[in-house]
Amino acid sequence: MGYETVLDKVAAAANRVGRSADGVTLVAVSKTKTVEDILKIYELGHRDFGENRAQELAAKAPQLPDDIRWHFVGALQSNKVRQIRSTTHLLHSMDRSSLAKAWLKGIGRPPPVLLQVNIGDEAQKSGIDPKDVAEALERMLMMGLTVRGLMAIPPIPESAERSRTHFQKLREIIEPISLLNPDCRELSMGMTDDFEVAIEEGASIIRVGRAIFGPRK
Image (cartoon, rainbow, N blue to C red; front, side, top):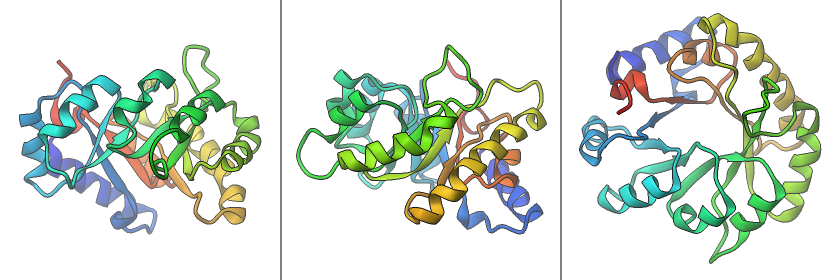
């Protein structure tokens, strides 16, 4: 597909529902890609990149420009937090108190987080049960985290349209939360196969890898 085509599709999806594409952050997910691959997209003006392995992010970040905003989008073990905490712009996968405690340790305020919701109730996936999100948010805020919103990875769709109900459900969860906590309104949802539907349903952050970089190695 390619980077420019993805941008065009983002703009078209936003326009279909009366939104501005400026309200959608495109995270170029660069897992398994080389520093050279990332630089090619960086040189086109892109600054938001995502990684899902702590070791990979820790290795790449020092080799790349300082103005990149790194998003950590994968499951994170508490003992790996120190590898990425100082580098991360936004952690998308906060899902438990033990990880929150680890994230809070260190010098200065920890980077903000999104709560990962297991929107499809899949046993093999991490995330907070949808019915427990409000309680988990309150607990994380009391611990001292800065929570910017929610993230979800729906079941792998047979078609993009199959993801729509999951995106709608995540939006319905955050709507009352954002009324009480105006700083907690981000929705990170949608990947290569369904990001256009996600935008139509209110995504403020989409995570796209394959459509930008090509197949993973």
